[in-house]
Amino acid sequence: MPYAEIHDMGTTARRKLTPHRRLKVWERTGGVCMLCDRMIDGARERWIAEHIRALELGGADDLENLGPAHEACATEKTRDDHRRAAHAKRQKIRFIGAEVSKRPMPFGKASPWKRTMSGRIVPR
Ligand SMILES: [Zn+2]
Image 1 (cartoon, rainbow, N blue to C red):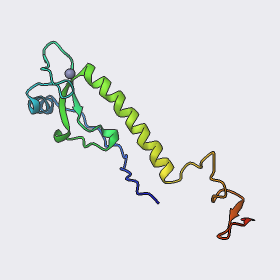
Image 2 (spheres, rainbow, N blue to C red):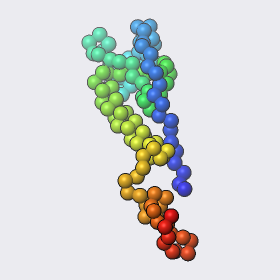
Image 3 (cartoon, protein in one colour):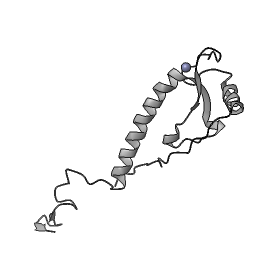
């Protein structure tokens, strides 16, 4: 059986940021957007404390995993993260056998027939 690496996709709980913590997030990059590398004009542009690794992809909800980002840039990243999280969940569902294949393997475990070592086909 091929080796498959499956990451645990448990979602980390999200804590609300105080202004003090938002300042710390800002200072991590000196106000440079994590996603587009351009300076954020904090007074004029909306920005958020973005999770470098998304919570739903197993990222931690602490300052080490946070950086400032334009709201517009973050919207785009969030969409991509959702897509990747959905893909990982589908992979996990298949891996743990939570979903039965709609096209079972011929003579596989789900088939009423099996092929013996000698090649004969017999009822299971
Ligand atoms: Zn940006």
